[in-house]
Length: 153
Image (cartoon, rainbow, N blue to C red; front, top):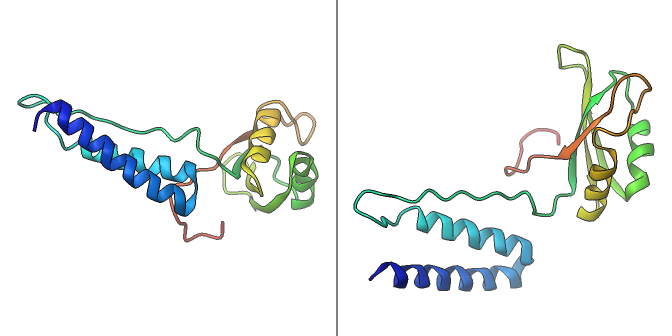
């Protein structure tokens, strides 16, 4: 099988898998699964005698409902965070991790019911809003979602 036929076969298989996954659990997840499958297969194909392509995927554009919030004052409360973040949508869960850093600052995770609400909060608040005047702006980023976690959040 030549290089063009191999690529077409991989695209066909990835497309079939993507269609099946879309029906089961949504377009975004299906695209991510198909992309990961195609990348894994392409990484095993030798294009030249010793050259192996290295393909990696960036999932920055996938929907995310969880946010990481940093640079919070040590005395921050759930009520204060909910007051600020509920302005941008329905907050499902708030988890504060207090006092573990050397600086004494806290951080938190905020979970929204919809990805567009989380995106709006992130774009509006990141490095622009001070929870406590003089403490500096808070950091608001997408939370890492590398799979199931054993921790409390």
